[in-house]
Image 1 (spheres, helix red, strand yellow):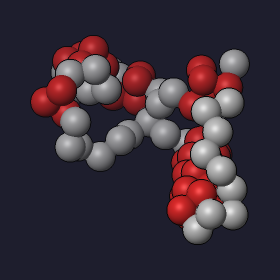
Image 2 (cartoon, helix red, strand yellow):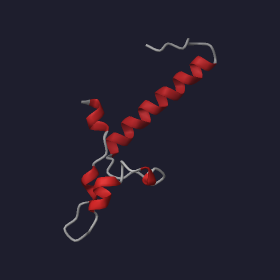
Image 3 (spheres, rainbow, N blue to C red):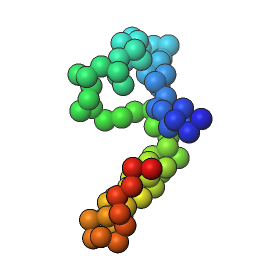
Image 4 (cartoon, rainbow, N blue to C red):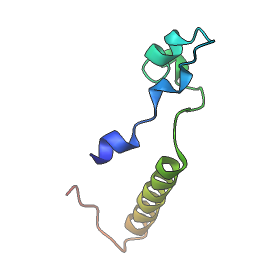
Length: 73
């Protein structure tokens, strides 16, 4: 459930007046779009990612400083 709630909305490209089906199909899947900005991400998803990333960076700093030991669990 957590994984699915973190996925971007790939249907943001759909429009009655636009011909954007190639973006719906390929934008997040094709390597050519790897350096493009992410679209279809809601504020809550971005906020959750920022919290997760901050936690990982802080964890790395604590491991590097010898306060925590690296644990694969």
